[in-house]
Length: 130
Image 1 (cartoon, rainbow, N blue to C red):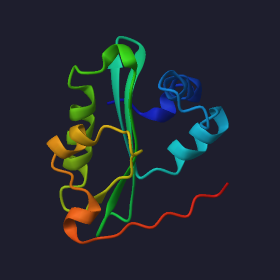
Image 2: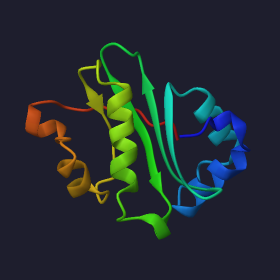
Image 3: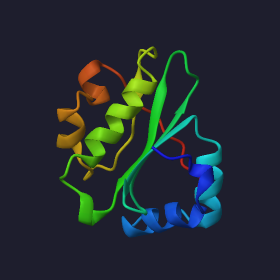
Image 4: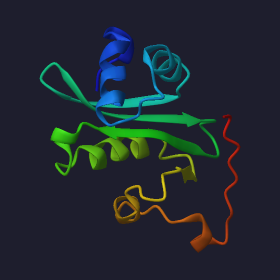
């Protein structure tokens, strides 16, 4: 884990671009990281290869907003380790929430113990600014 304020935002925005998240330009990445409750990072040497970003009230819920791993480092346990670090940080918080694309890694999140809202008799609502 490294302090995200100790390296240029460009490294983070490069990681976002590398996974195809083009809506995150350097300014948005910087603002998003600065406004996060917790950010876990994974490094290979001097290269940022993974990032998990959490927003939370630190009492009732934490929201796994972003989980990114560079393609070259996927399927090596990086994302699992990042989620584990988030869970350690928020062990006292009873509920974790995340949203993913319909074709996102549902099996991966299921293997980590996340359940789809409908399986818990819950409904999610999202208002996305266009």
